[in-house]
Amino acid sequence: MSDTATTPASPPPTRAADRTPVVPPRAKPGRARAWATRAPLLPALVFMIAVTQLPFVATLVISLFEWNALYPDDRGFTGFDNYSTVLSDSDLRSSVTTTALLTATVVLVSLALGLGLALLLDRRFRGRAVVRTMTIAPFLIVPIAAALLWKHVLFNPEYGLLNGLLARFGDLFGFTAPQPDWISDMPLIAVEVALIWQWTPFMMLILLAGLQSRPLDLAEAARIDGAGDWQIFRYLTLPHLRRYLELGGLLGSIYIVQHFDAVFTITAGGLGTANLPYVIHQEFTQAQDYGVASAAGVLVVIGSLILAMFALRVVSSLFREEGSRA
View 1: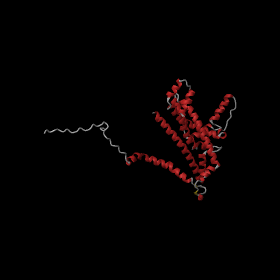
View 2: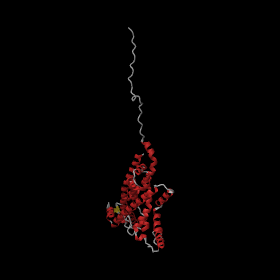
View 3: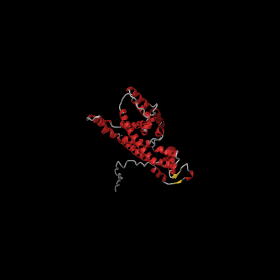
View 4: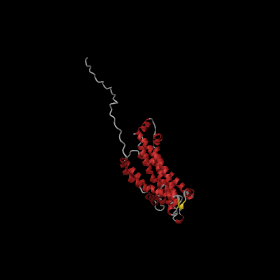
């Protein structure tokens, strides 16, 4: 009987996918590592809460109390009575109307002038950097200093620059030029002009950034097809700038709604120029009614937060559009 050699069975063929090494899943960072990465931000967070949120909470609490420094014994909890007082007071209602008119005028005119300046500064010419710096300069001036400049250097009826130019113009052409008292004759327009002068560079910067981000190949193709400058601006440039116009309008509205310096400095709130921040200041410093002033301040903050929410949505949409082009 012969021995038969038994050969071991060969293993079944393995696929390429079976030969790939198995990589263990990466372990998620623990809580200690997460806190270590966030720890450098904690001082800034604590500072922001202490500077912004705690005063707002204190203002919110005071707005629920009848709190007048002239009558310290009558202090007590009143709920939302201060808010009804704010909404029913005729002076406060007129200040809301003045604030809306002032904000709308300044924002719209600043946007129009800023768009014109952005279109001019988007072109190449000698000395463009110097012109841009000079154009931005009004926005860099301290608001109270800008208001004093307009009140004493430009609007003054006796030695102001505007009346001096009118007098010189009249002497050149042989007639007696009028010498108006700009602040007394047109108080709200005087405040608006000072704010427009200061906020036009801000709008120009935003719109100039939008102009420099537009795709130039579309404009060149449209020009080859026979489109003129106005058609390119209307159908290509203006739709591209829509988001930037919205952003400039929202940001400008947030700041101008809370603006106090120009009204306080140029007109001292008189002649129908008292906006809501000025009336709040009067309620707090002269009437000493802390409850009503705090309620009005809370309403202003709520309105500003609503505008800020829309501004953040516009900014996020701009970032998404830029990311999709990259």
